[in-house]
Image (cartoon, rainbow, N blue to C red; front, side, top):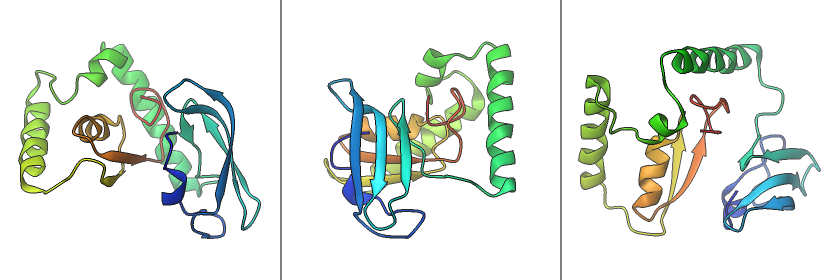
Length: 156
């Protein structure tokens, strides 16, 4: 979790804005990696693990099933030879699907007047490849997803 992010979060439990304080257990010099976010409005606590804040809490059953399905899909990807480095190469993977993703990303990057330092919310960020590309262009990115699984979620 990077500096400046807390002011952009709303507590999912009580909807209070800018109410979080962060207790850091581990910092890697670039970002907080382990700790706890606490809402001053409702005192609910949310864990920060491996740089990812788990704001989902107790998700509805259909959301939990979808997240579990993404974890199973990550296992299929591993069996097909995908690994962290290959995911981090996206969208430059030499497959037709990724050619289209790359072209779409490049097109929208040219069309939208982003300025360095602006904040961008990437909803449904999955492997975070687009989040990473926006960050490389100087944007401050919040990646949001229901899944945290390596290769199919925020821990990628």
